[in-house]
Image 1 (cartoon, rainbow, N blue to C red):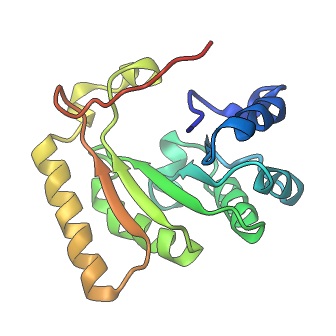
Image 2: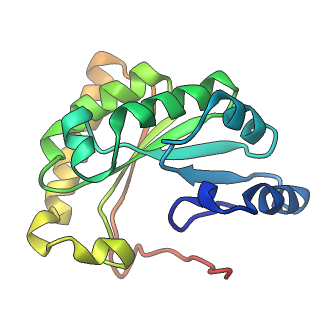
Image 3: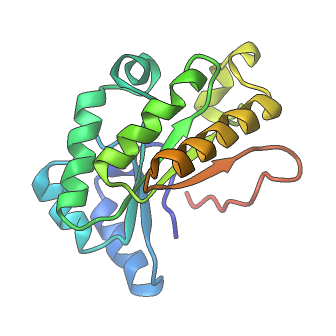
Length: 178
């Protein structure tokens, strides 16, 4: 189970939810913006989740344009890792940050995360406000991804590399529980 939909950690009942899901499902993942993850919170989460996914869209100045406070995100990720929670990163791919993907991948490697997943945003929810000219084409996204694969093999970066392209054939499935 992968709990999603904004920042789950702002829910007052998040630990009750995590505990109830943990009783039923063997693997529990949690997306987070990581900005509020203290060492204590990371330790508490380490007892309930199998992994966390944090968003990071590039180096400090690039990430801060959309995602939020880069430094707080990095501290939160480090707190999770130091408390034994495996972390993967998701990076929203937009035309403004496509050239910074190699730096994002290096940051992922330096942090010691397990995976960097490049995601072309789906124009739904909060992403509806993204202008269509800010979204790369699937071809541009694939070129950027292949460039990262070349960098990975050339300089031996450790995190697994993945990409999600969205379209009629790759939308996937989700279950909304409200």
